[in-house]
Structures are given as C-alpha cells and as structure tokens.
Image (cartoon, rainbow, N blue to C red; front, side, top):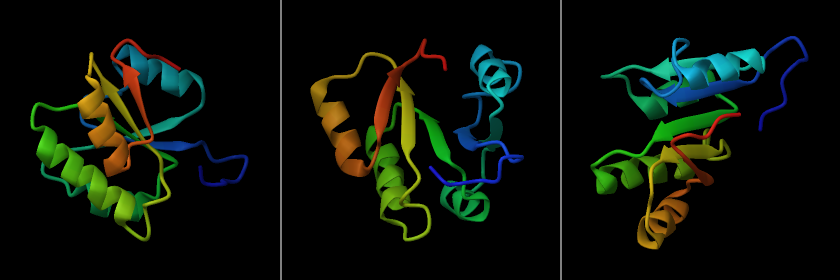
Length: 116
C-alpha cells in the first residue's frame, strides 16, 4: 500500500454501499482510522482511482461477473492504479469465479461477514 504521512489516514475507495459510515463495516474501518471514499453510481471508477490514488479498492461481487472481471482487469493493468490491491467482499464463490478474479487482478476475496 502507498506510504502516507503519519497524519494522513489510509484511504479506501469503496463501491457504493459497501462501507458507508452508517454500515457496520464503515464504522469499523473508521474506528481503525481509515478514510473511506465511496464510488457513486455514474462515476468512472478507474478515473476516480487515478485521481484519489487510494491505498485499497474495496468492491462487492455483482451478478454481472464478466463485466466485473473486465473492470478489475482495467484497474490492474492501468499504469497508475495497477499497484493498488483490490479486495472483494463476496458470498460463497466457486473455484472458477475465484480463479477468474485472481487472473483479473483481485488480490483477495473476503466473506460478506468480514470485518477488520
């Protein structure tokens, strides 16, 4: 993850609804001193990541797997944001989906009930 000055919290770029301040995960992340910025609907996630250069990208696993994996490949192959780890919260996934995700650049899958 990126090195930040001691006074700056680590920044997590999260898909909308994944870690809002009212959610349990959002409260826990903030409790640990992390700054969470949500990607809103209609925003270009890759452009947002380039502008913010977060320390971590937190996504949820959607129904449209192929589009999602394509987006992850765009993140991981981008010269500016490709170093940023992608963490995905998902329910039960099979080996095929996980393999596709790792090939697309996802660093790790965590369960829906995961918390820091």
